Amino acid sequence: ETGVTQSPTHLIKTRGQQVTLRCSSQSGHNTVSWYQQALGQGPQFIFQYYREEENGRGNFPPRFSGLQFPNYSSELNVNALELDDSALYLCASSSGQGTNTEAFFGQGTRLTVV
Amino acid sequence: DQQVKQNSPSLSVQEGRISILNCDYTNSMFDYFLWYKKYPAEGPTFLISISSIKDKNEDGRFTVFLNKSAKHLSLHIVPSQPGDSAVYFCAASTRLVQTGANNLFFGTGTRLTVIP
Image 1 (cartoon, each protein chain N blue to C red):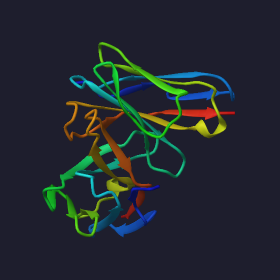
Image 2: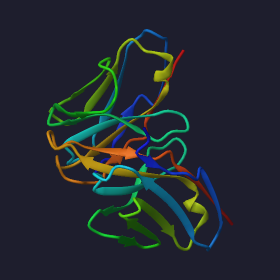
Image 3: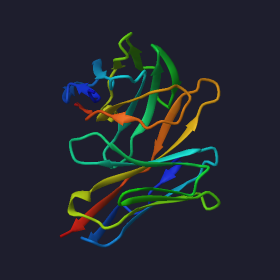
């Protein structure tokens, strides 16, 4: 059973650029959630995907978008990067829409916007 | 608006003693609570959870207590070990009725240091 893996682990981008972060969910999991963790804060929910459709969204602007693929892997895209987007981006996978199940996290992608 | 709060940013405990980490929440719709442990350069690792229909859940050295009337939960680690040194996040979950999405609301974390 493979865990949640994210790529890349670190990334530096310039303000105004676009970025794509990738996540492979844990085997058997069909739900992927993305979180942003700013320095000194807890993770903040961005959105969740279930069976390739967005299934809930936190308080993030539309320039944060995502995709889920048939194999349940996922991408997070951020357009028009701002300095405040610098954070650790965490992907979490879980099984069973609508049920309270534990989310298993990847190691994260550290994004720095300069 | 921080719906889940961990008011102690850090805690130091002697090895072998009890560690008590606290968490408060404001949203009465939360129905599931989780604790995650995070080491540097790693993602959060699930530790233990509790449903709102229970007031206690135990797993080895870890016990979570839930006091719904006070909107408070705590994580007890007994006995504490140096390997327990990490940042501990409290998280709460509420199911979005329309979509069934199940997002987590996290506290800001408590850094536990267990002194050998």
